[in-house]
Image (cartoon, rainbow, N blue to C red; front, side, top):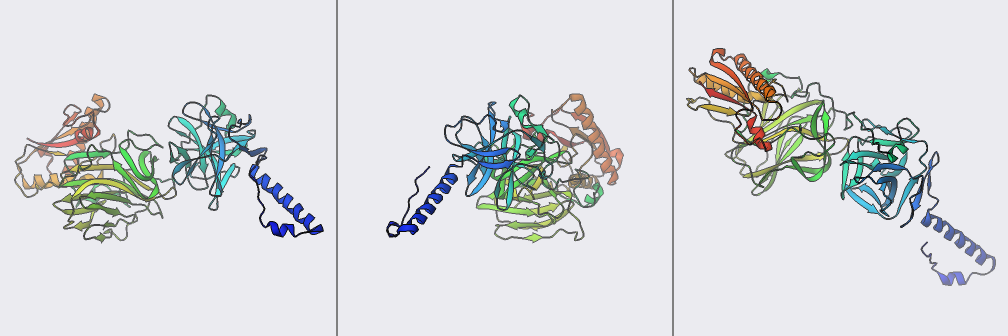
Length: 547
């Protein structure tokens, strides 16, 4: 114990008799209390036989210490907590550490002064859904009027121990010198309703929670829906957005894992994690003001004039969502804000503009929405769903790269998917004599693994329709093409089905079906390198070959 010094000795020396005896008795009692506070070896009771025991450097871990997980090398991780700025935060420790690891402020902190939870009888781990902490959860600390509870989660081949609280919908752990937010987790409880604590001493691992545990448990009736009224392709009949012909970056997160950070992205600021909405992976921005995520590109400056950007973003009921797209330019960073109410606004351009969603009666909550913009000759056009919302005639900027992000937290994340950045865009063939051999398009999009056309494809379909109207003698073979993922026979059939679906869509737009034939080529005619993500994206296309 550290020494306790008494000041004011002249005053003490002046005391005599009974007064002096009373003064020194009180001083002795105060010293005893201070010793108890400093040592804390008796630890804090936690109910039902559990208590927190202070561990000094070099001390042995008690035999009945609560095991919460296993580190990546197989070493057991014990449940601990540490004091940070006057509040106790649950975390983990190992026999060879002499510290405890906690998550705090988005970082991993290793603290020397800590306590370990002992007394593992009557404890178990239970999965948590939608952040609803059980009443019998074991409390491990307190901060900002929140009771902090002990949680564990699977992370990078290990089972880590951390903290959670009511409504957070995640386990927060320290790992690799950073704070991490994991949506699938279990909470330590009093009782035997879940996985017994002792199970972690064997080779078994935690039971992962199959339930969507991210905020508000978003439910989407149809993952391809992009407007408030579940629109079909007819709603987009006047849509004129045509994406670029050469895809620079595309990610639908299909190759990533639920609960992880996507492989094709870098995190500049904030926190983000993949989670499923209606069975499809989307990226949840769970922390940051502003969070920023960068597509992994080979060069820092990759945008051309023209270029196009597309993504889908989800608006939760009664929540603040939307998506912000940061545009790095030669003179600094600008941004476009696609708001949850469907409006679009610009920031940090020489001249900023904003415009509301054209349909004032639209109910956008609870649905996916398609955001897109094209930059061409300094002009920028921004679209939400079937509408062109914002026009900036002269931006006076030269874009070089793109980032995605915004303000998000665990209870109100920003959610987006289906990102595409392409060079070129808005091919100006309408009203002109068509003399090219073919048109290669990447703007006709389909549901993943299906032949159903997504509504935002109407910009490209409208363009093809106008070309056929302006050139009445013209006939096309519609060719469907895929990348090399999957079985060749499957891809051949899928590409044929998609070509047939495009033909049907054009017939519904008034084109004579005798002018259109179809053929599925599958993976047999790549135009890009199937060993790269952007090559695969360019190989997934629909071609209109002149007959």
